[in-house]
Length: 214
Image 1 (cartoon, rainbow, N blue to C red):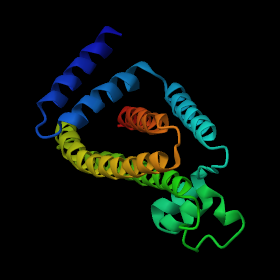
Image 2: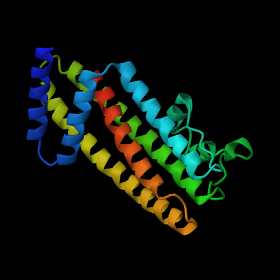
Image 3: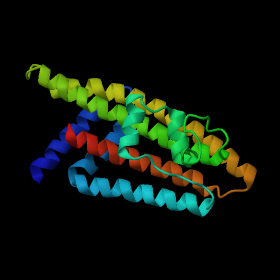
Image 4: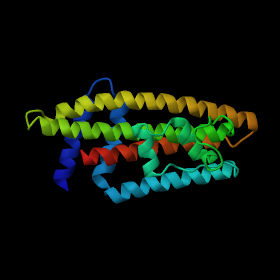
């Protein structure tokens, strides 16, 4: 255990020395601690619990809201391009059950559509992170030990930091639209903070999962 925390301390110091990625560093420190102190099963359970809490909150805010999270197979289809974002939104909002999933999703309620967009953004982001971890592992293997893990980590963390900033920007935009819609309809404004908390919590847990793999 002592050796484990020495390694953790070294990694944290390394992360703090990286330039231009302040937010990513703080989030990675939290993710690393989670990854080193939790099992894969515990992290998976945490992700599932956050998903359940968010769905319960959505149901409280509007019982009419229909949110059907994508299955693993559907998420993979979205990631590899065999399913479009509009098709995914149609599935999440339940429109695909009664109409052609290729039809535009604008006919769904505004709030329902915005929630569905969050699921699409999340799926795209986690897919990109998974891809980066795979690339980093392959680059290390191809280097035959000539490329240090530190240099590979710095390279891919920089790329991941850019992806995260893009994802955060998209989430901020959607949360702003959700807040405006709730204000317009007199809805429960606590939903915004609930979604934001779930987003950051899930992002940290997901990165802990990926970092532990690397």
